[in-house]
Image (cartoon, rainbow, N blue to C red; front, side, top):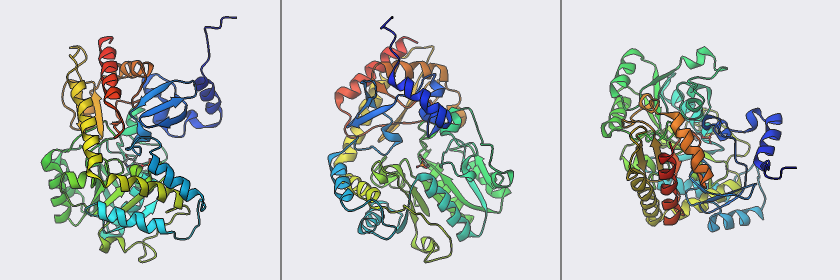
Length: 430
Ligand SMILES: *Cc1c(COP(=O)(O)O)cnc(C)c1O
């Protein structure tokens, strides 16, 4: 019996998973299908590291896709959770932590006066759009190619993220009558937005990622966000910032603080739950008070505001109140970005390094990426090869060219330098 061929536990788990879970995963990108890999099953995590079921350790740049901005198992978050656990897991009645978290969110996010907790980013965006439609008494939603707003029917039009990864634009199962209420245009293209307003009198809201993370990282042109704000105001449409990814990450008050733009509604998720399932949407009091039971726009949730999720979110947001955390996050991101930019480029495989505090993408293309269309010029084969190389060298990078990597405050200089070395080696072997 050859004992050199050892079937990994991850492989065995994946084979079992495929029998009972579609594609073997509960969220598509995790399958690592696009990079020619199979999922690594994780046994535990701490700080900046993931430990898999086969005993290997990785430097983690997925960070649960955003929530783990302070790293895994931050002691304060763990302590808050352990404390909350002593009191019960869900009451279906209000608890004090809901009020505290809502107060802290209103204090931290510049344009949230009132906030409603839900259980995921998807719920937040779906509910925000319903509210915008009710408030404006209009139906059409304008979004941007490559922006992902969760898997609500209205958003699965040129949706980036997992759809872009699988080479899809839309999803079967979304009725034409619903899809036609969503207009999707190119990111960073104000003229396309003006044209849409001229052609459609029924636009209730513009929803966007003010910094895109779901087509890889794409920054807004300075005049783009300002232009959108103006166009919404003049056309009686609401501006919805989907800050599920950027909220409490690109700065304490999210992209709206970074770019000094005032959206009418803001969607939150990921970081706000400290690793537990939480989403939220908030904004001007006048609009938010239309939600039941103070108003008639219906939205509810059995587990919304549950004490465990609130405790984790509160603990994490309290730590994030310190400006020091963002200094750390920024200097960690810059160290990685500078190191990657300094890699002597392989002329056949040029790369673009895009970054903002807490997020980074290495695009395998020769021009800077400004929208989904330019993101699609990337050499996804080269990306896949590099990704597999990184994994073998202990770096867990997002398994798609169309996803941003997430930095935490606890990635050490050594972790970052090791990552840069692994990239350099992988690029050299292309
Ligand atoms: C992740 C994400 C969502 C969806 O959040 P879920 O919790 O996965 O439903 C929505 N919008 C943006 C910008 C996201 O990054």
